[in-house]
Image (cartoon, rainbow, N blue to C red; front, top):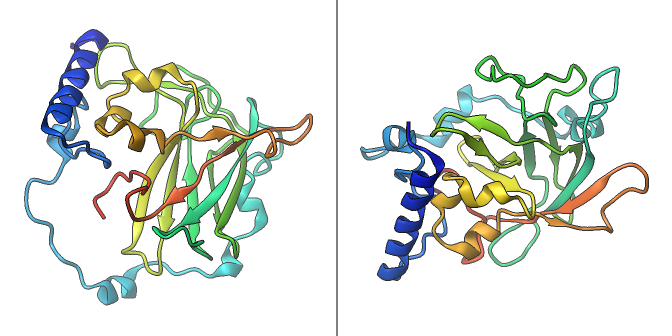
Length: 248
């Protein structure tokens, strides 16, 4: 199996090619060979257009009353306290003109402090935490702000190549006015050395765009003797848009 040295060399070559061509991709490349499964998983045919009204007839529906404040605190969803670094993650959802996106449904999911998901497909030898499910949701307020209290996730191994490790990250999902307007992205933590080795993160060839996926530590967000704090804004459109996993 290919090792990290070969993967890093492939990433560097693709970044150099992008630089020579003067084309820095600010969104993830759908076909990025160092991310091995993208070669098989990315669409190769034209997408089929869907009637959004027909989709809405079969899609789930929700309102503000379906979401409670407890949904945004991933540390109080069980009878005991989860293990790990308690942290607050907050920010604003903005459009391309810097205006707040109000009443936006924001969902997150993540691994626990040991880097393990509660998912049948995740069977690597790290412990589950019976007091941490790793999923939350909230609605943005009038200023476009969201706020979650959670446990800082750990890195975890994956089978892209030999001894591959994903950097610590939190998945974000945002819905627009209907269920055909979903955007998915990932937030990373500052100073993580695994980001430089990760072909998913590196599938964005524009360094400034990659930087927009990294949260900033914010001491004003911390809670004394309780939680550290990170701030991460999400921009939906425009030249400063946050990279998303699906083409928009």
